[in-house]
Amino acid sequence: MLRRVDRSEQECSAEDAATVHPTHKDFRKTISCGLVDFRDVADEARQFLSLPRPEPGADPRSRPASAPVGSPESARRLFAISHPIAGTVVEAYLRKRGITALYETGSLRFHPRCYYRPDRYSPTETWPAMIAAVTDLDGRITGAHRTWLAPDGGDKAPIDTPRRAMGHLLGHGVRFGVAHDVMAAGEGIETILSLRGIMPVMPMVAALSAAHLAAILFPTTLRRLYIARDDDQAGDNAMRTLVDRAQEAGIEAITLSPQLGDFNEDIRTLGKDALRSMVRVQVAPEDVARYMTA
Image (cartoon, rainbow, N blue to C red; front, side):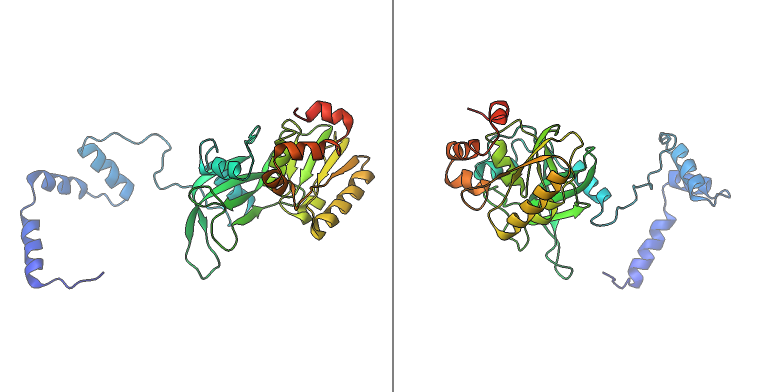
């Protein structure tokens, strides 16, 4: 805010300037001896005030270059500044969704105040969020998925689009465990974590949408792929495409079907025991012994 300075204030300022402490006068005399570069002035001031010199190479003005909005680098930075989920709103949210087995969930993190903007014309809001790292087959982060949450973790945040992704997603996904010869793939994070509740050591990947599920890349060592389909048209289309791609690559494809809309709805509505019984008959016998809990 601008305000007008009256004459009395100008006079007070002039009087103050005329009564500068002698030490200040000495300092003004010191820095007026032909120094024109700010760095030289700063060095002289530091010496006069007996302040330590900065570390060699340190530049207080240097900051990392900003990453393009929505880029893989932006996704990597968001994941890096987020926190482990233990004891956070994310853990509360997942448990509310019937997900209690949180083994190998390092791909998930918590951000307490993640930016959310409904559209380009609206102000930015902040909400707690589950941040999921999207990685390629080598484990490099190529993107991130954000699920904004209610402050108590009881549900997703009451906003128009509580889920959004950024970065390069095609072919990649949110991974739980490292796949070798066997892997399961599905759409949603909650869907995959529901299956992990009954098969906690089977490597799995959440592709985040039906279209991306159809396009996931296969590890070169993969021999059997379980496809956790959602019970809708998009899920059926993705499943058929993925079955064809797997068979062309010489990979056995087995479809896992939920009783309700998806496996998270199954575990929340029917319970873990019912989900285990239902999935057990769809899994290859050798994998029941290898991966399923009693």
